[in-house]
Image 1 (tube, each protein chain N blue to C red):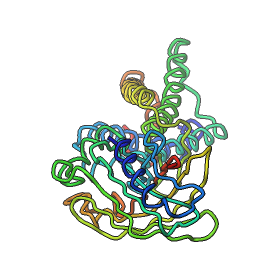
Image 2: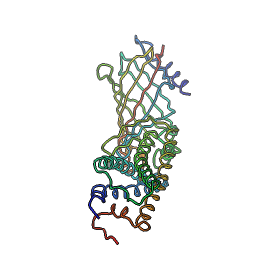
Image 3: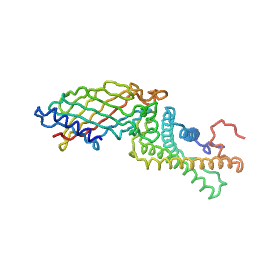
Image 4: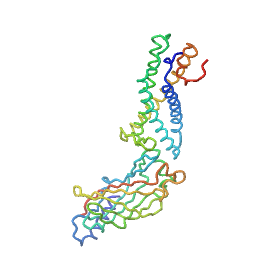
Length: 182
Length: 189
């Protein structure tokens, strides 16, 4: 395996950091909405928002890194349709990773709760308080998240299929260096 | 209800002030143009709210502010604390306990001039059965024959046991709550 068929160490770190953040945010998001109102609930909502803003910033960092460091090419054996599918799925992942925090931020504003990153950096409200818009954006935030879950599952299954069926390096090249390979 | 109370007070005050030559004495509160709102801080984030129902009565002559007085009664159940969840929560026992203490009142004891259009009202604030002194600076201006009073002061919610038990953690909901009032009163003639 030559060096340029692997992702850069930075890209790999960002990918897995993002994976952990997204699963954490998703799980916390589902959990917190079920909680009865309490100080703990208000805390968790704030933490969720802070982590969401962090994820948004990380996506921007990833996109910037990606622009300067093109990902390794797809394996030669893939059909045109498979290539199209892979490109579309990756595009959709990035789109959702941008749209979900944006919808969360807008929802917060419409519900009348400004987002203040780590309780220190206020993020301006683009929308004024509006109950109807708030409910609409909440629906959008939740729907986009389930769509993301679906695309992430497709993404993971495709990676495993490359590894187990095609027996190419698509999965392995995104694993941290030093991971045992079969 | 609001109107009749203020009309009554206005006529009383007319009798009181009849002897003194005053340019304008504002005493008839226009409830629909007045507002009482507040800003609390949750996890470092300001969240606004307001009270939909309150009775205000006042007497104020900018020429002799020290004669002024004001009384404000707030219907606590009319609170909008920012969201439906919050509205359901804050009328309960741990917060305002509106069943036992339906109203918050402010009764002025003194008004003094701070210079220009700025004044300061001092009085007794009673919420949830607890009475504490409170002082609020305010501005006064005339607007189309009405007097407009705008002011703001900060109260500490725990002084009045607003938010007991788990809610007394001021790290989540801050102790300080900014209260703003904007009262419009017509001149009593």
